[in-house]
Length: 223
Image 1 (cartoon, rainbow, N blue to C red):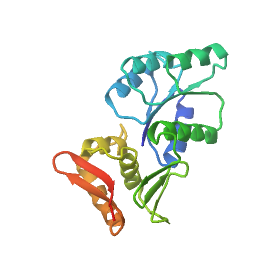
Image 2: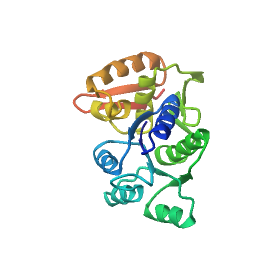
Image 3: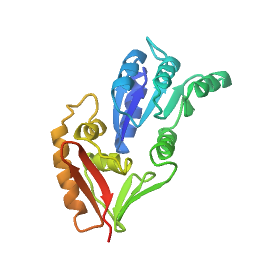
Image 4: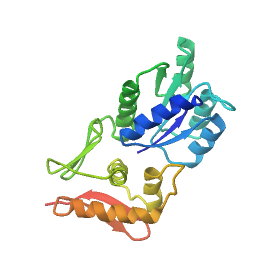
């Protein structure tokens, strides 16, 4: 799953990004509100982390524009402002959570997991597709009760697909979840990851189906 982090304090942004990437998420980092607004209007994110005190366009304005466009992705606000009125203002604009600086990276990661669990998995800790089970808290897949070993790219593809069960995902949509803004997004590379995942799922009651010209669908195989 792909996260947008918008923070103008470069050192803090780097620390947070590395922590989130280390936990397995694809992270784009931006440092001003105008760039964030453009990215949110054109890219596909599972969650946004917005600092309030951004240059050019503050976090409140970015959030307001996001919600005015009808976008429902969860937003976690970061701020040095601890006043109740600021928290209330952000929540009224449509923020889903609020974290005041300074904060522990472990708490940030826990809040990110909680927001994604509610928005992507409908509040459930586990998502199942046949013998395939995804534990969002542990960021781990099991297959028939055994840990499924995946590369970071394979994990990102499978996370995107299990979060959208019942929906066909195009190569472009999958690439948007796998590659960040600073990487060359290659839809053709998705075919390689799909091939590898099929080999790892082989012989189990779950499969990836190709819909020619449309994309791929993860589904359980009935006995």
